[in-house]
Amino acid sequence: MRWPAHIVQKSSRLLDTETIENKFYPLYDDILNECFPRTTFSISPQYATPMAQTGGVGAIDFAITYVIEALDIDSPVLFIEVKPPIHLPVISARKEAENQVRRRFGEISHLVKIPKLYGISAIGRQLSYYEYNKASGRIVPDALPDSSAIVMDTAPVERWNTNIMEPEGYDKFVRIVEEVKRMTFALWWVYPFVV
Image (cartoon, helix red, strand yellow):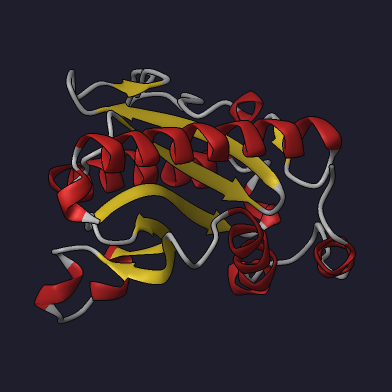
């Protein structure tokens, strides 16, 4: 199976030279709605972290582009941060995109009830996957050491190695979605009182 025609059509309208990340929001909104049924999951755009709720200057920087939550258990099960495709070749932009995902784990880890939370950095259609293990607190892949004295590529472009619109990228994304659903449904089975 591949993405339905309306998703393919939306993707085909997006340019790889796009400078505005918001142009990619409708594509990811449709993809997430295709994968996560509204009867069991909620897709929250511009999900406010606790830091966003303090308000003030820069509060928008504490809103996650998309968070998928399992209904009735009040737990994030996946999140995606979206950046425009022109960020992909820029070392500092990739570094910031990766650091943002790592910060997000710290901002919402106290809400996580499933064993593993996936965070995805989407730069245009290219995806980089991150995993937070609730038991150990570890984030994979490991962060690479940075330097203030020399330019270091701590977020290599190879991390964004799948295009969500190509067969391999589609397959990987759907595998992650199915794993998230399995973890969520297992939690419902163990704790049926929360449903």
